Image (cartoon, rainbow, N blue to C red; front, side, top):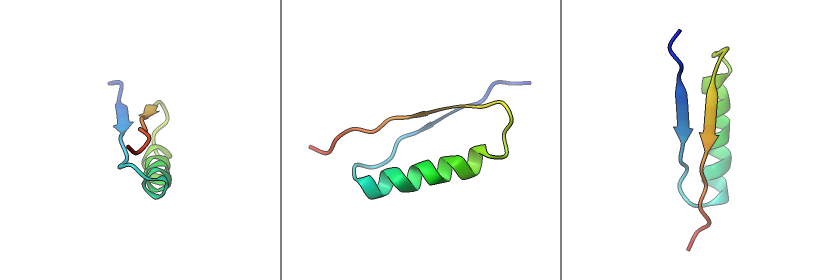
Amino acid sequence: MKKVELVFVPSPGVGHLAATVEMAKLILIEMIDYQSQFYHEAPI
C-alpha cells in the first residue's frame, strides 16, 4: 500500500485553524494508516 501524507496549512486566525483541524479529521477518519501534519504560524 502506498504511504499517504497530508499536510494542512490553515490561514492565519484561530477560526481557520479549528476548521482545518475538523476537515482533516473528517478526511482521515476513513483512512487506516495515515500521517498528518499541521503547520500554523502566528499572525504578524
